[in-house]
Each structure stands twice: as C-alpha cells, then as structure tokens.
Image 1 (cartoon, rainbow, N blue to C red):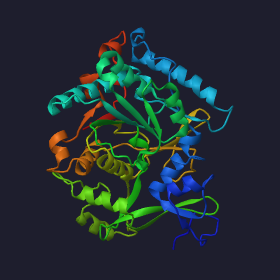
Image 2: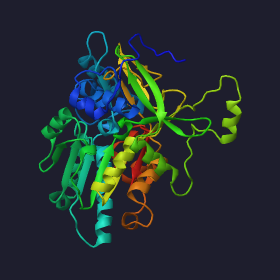
Image 3: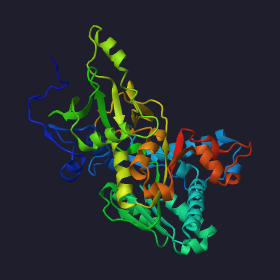
Image 4: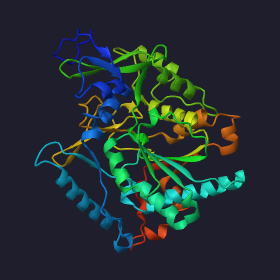
Length: 439
C-alpha cells in the first residue's frame, strides 16, 4: 500500500500534460496534472511565465575582459572575479530572501579569448573543408542559445579582424529560445548577424549549405527523462511526475510508451563497437540474488536519459544535414542528486549560500537543474543519428570526436594572452570539468 505525500485528494483526476502545453496555457505551475520527467524539468526551467530562466537566471558578465597578465596568479584573478560576482549578486538580491540566480560561463570569464579560440577552430576547419570540396564557400554559423551575445561578438570580431575576406561573406545566426536574451543579443549584434527568437526544437527550415552549429553550455540544461529497470525482467519503466492539488509532487513509474524514450533506448542498444550497458542495471545473476533478499526492491535506481540531446541530434540530421558541430559543456559535476546515474545538480541560492537538493522534484522556477554530459556516449549517439555507417555524411565529414577543454585550448587558443605573471594560464587550468564534442 502506497501513501502519497500529500494532504490533497489523491483520487482527483490528473490530466497528462507536456511542457509545451504548460508554456502555452499556464501562467502558474499547474495542479492535478501529470507529465513525463523531461516535461516537468523543461517546464520548471523554461516556462515563459514562471520558469527558472524566465524569472531567476542572470549570466555573470564582467564589464570588460580581464587583463590576465596584470594578475599575479590564478588565485588573484579568482579573487577579483569573486569580488565582482558578489557586487552583482548584491545588486540583484533583495535584503533577504531567495535571490535571482547568477552563474558564469567560460565564454564570459575568459572573454574574448575563449570565443576567439572557438572562432579559430571554425575558420581552420572551414578552410580545410573548402580545400577538400574545391570550392570557396561562405562561412555559415548557427549558434544555439546565445546567452548575453558574448560568444557571437567574439567569434564575429575575430573573423572580422583576422579574415576580412571571409568575414565579408560570413553568415552568423543565433537561435535563442528566450525573448529577453534575444533582445539583448540584437542590441549588441554586429551588422549582418541574424537573431532568431525560436527554440531549435521548433526549427523547420532546411539548411542545405555547409555550416557550423555551435552549442556552448547548452546541453547541460536540456531536460532529461528518468527510467528505472524492473529487477525481474530488466524492462525499462518511464517516470511520470504527479502534481497534486496542493502542489505536492510524486514520481510514478509506468511501462515505456513515450516514442522519444523508446527510440533513444533503441539507438543506444544498437550502438556500434562496444555496446553501452546502463550502470543502473545490474547483471542478471546479481538481480536474481538481490530479489531473494528480504524487502528487496522491485526496481533499480534511477537513470537520467539525455532524450532532449538525442532529439537535438535528430534536428541537426533533418535540417542541417551538412553541419559540423562544436559543442562544449560539463562532463562532471559535484553535488548531483544521489543514488542515480547521470543525475543532475539541483540547486538554488538563499541568503548568499548555495543550497543543493537531493531530488529534482522541486518547486518550478526557483531551482536550477543542470546535468553532466557523458560525452563519449553522446558522441556515439550523435554519430548513430547524424553520421550512420556507410552514409554520405560519414564519408564526407567523418565521425565526431571528444577532447578536453585543455586539449581544445592548446590546439586553438592564443595562450600568450591568457597567462598570468606566475605562468599559470586560466584558459588551460579553469573549467577542467568541461569537454568538447567536435564533428
């Protein structure tokens, strides 16, 4: 017998809704509904009325790029960053209470050199591709989720200064889901840059030209689904979040019926080379042994599935068939939700302190929910979707590969400009938990 964690009428009908439905129809978090885990997370993060990114998130951006050579060492730089970060937090917060959330990215902290390193990679790959094709094609870039517009400005600025002939024919596009951020990007966009206020998942325009798709610090906030596996049969079960009339939340499991979850699990199971086996699913012998124990569970621990990242791969395959991908994000994070595979960090700030949570079932809008990325698995899933064996895409563009932030910087960054007086180099030493997926 299960007792629901609510004082409301648990027998009240619960309508199944999606994040898209809530975005179109809800101005406050809905009650007496249920939704897949990815829809609950997507609604909590992106609902235009009450989502975290609509009401809480602010990207830390220093007024100007740092003169790295003026700092004694990385500690001195971080002290200055902390001072400016604190000033910006105090300017945003109330005297006491839950403040607006403030976070930083390598694009902002290492500007303009981080963006320039991305631009140098793109230009080199574009030159090599043009030589292989025997054509001088224009440089076409689509950036997903442009933030404050800093990466856009730094990439375009580098091409303008270093490759003026290429810049004259360059087409730079930003695809931004947030109306607020899209307005900020248009305000600082150089001439010729197009800002498109749309979710990339709503993209329907086929781009047949060779192009680059850039996604920096994007996939960590893409909603995930949750599954657990039946101990007896190993069959996956999808999680649905039940929202009761009093706002209490409960996670319920049901057989997999969602097409996106089903398709992701199928593609993952058929990956070439070494097949991926979920760490959440013990071996058959261990499952049998554990089921004989008293009070043995009937399901495994949770696994968070990157189904929305999988959906992004499909968008790239269907609408950007000749793209090259430049994607970077976290591959490891501290304080993730415990006892789960590929679990997110769920946190907010209160009274100047960061408060991590042990569950993703939190009040929508007040908490950041962000995920580490298994880059090696994502690379194989990406290739299975966008570069399948014997396809023209694989033959012409080759498979994807993964590298660390340090490896990418050594290959592309102007490291002489980011060195402190002690010889430490934040471009190499910071963000060691970041990786790149390049195709």
